[in-house]
Image (cartoon, rainbow, N blue to C red; front, side, top):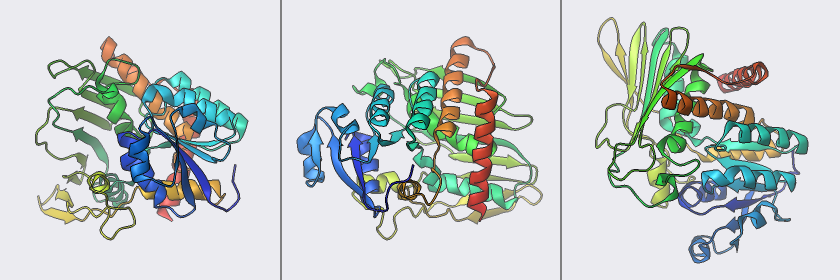
Length: 369
């Protein structure tokens, strides 16, 4: 799978919000990655930001470009599977923005194809490199909370007006849960492993809405309950993340700052990038004391550093396709639960569960070193 330790030539497909805000600046901040080709219908916009790249209006031309080693797919969700398939068949390594695909069957097919081709396939679950997620991991690993009974995480926004864009139109892979659900699901299962059952509820609450703009999903474990929630009608919310244990509780207010910084043009290698001013707060169960715990500094470019190291043969894939299949299984099961009103088991094979558990164990051991 590894490539020679020279610059890895990157082709980016899509220069909308995700491609422009996240992928392009993150890729450019990592030595050893060279963004050379961009697929977009907005040639002038791309060249204004990236005058050194070649721009192609046909996305498949980037997926199969002979002078590209790594293809990054940041196009609309329903294009992820066909473009990743074309890139893998052309012998390219592939990074796909979340969601991995729009169906579990597509995700499984891509995993199989990547194995056949001997190519790296990864999914951009960038929330793993956000301060809120890192702070949650850190307080859990400290043991200060005791045995955890409840984890609740929100990504709420206030966007009462329906916008004319593919994410909010009625089509495959559209809607709020397809957009933000993969973030929340991936964090939950990296923290606690796979749930036994899932129950979910979805709603369209905004006037003129065509797709879900409110989602409430519960992952059920033996005793632990995990609540994943997102809405577009929350002007000012409460804590984003909450943990309750038998010794203490913990809450994190305030979002990770990296997205705002990237929009403002602040580079990931700038001083102060990813420094979160909002601490987590630990509430001691016995005394009621409140203790502020600073949030760790974060940098989403670490994902692409690890992709580079994986391609150079130095480290494992930071987000494996098997982990992303598990996210897709929960995503698909949650939609089925929401439409049927039933509590449903997770639809993964025994082999998929074993592979996920082993990869999660190794990742946990690596992070503790």
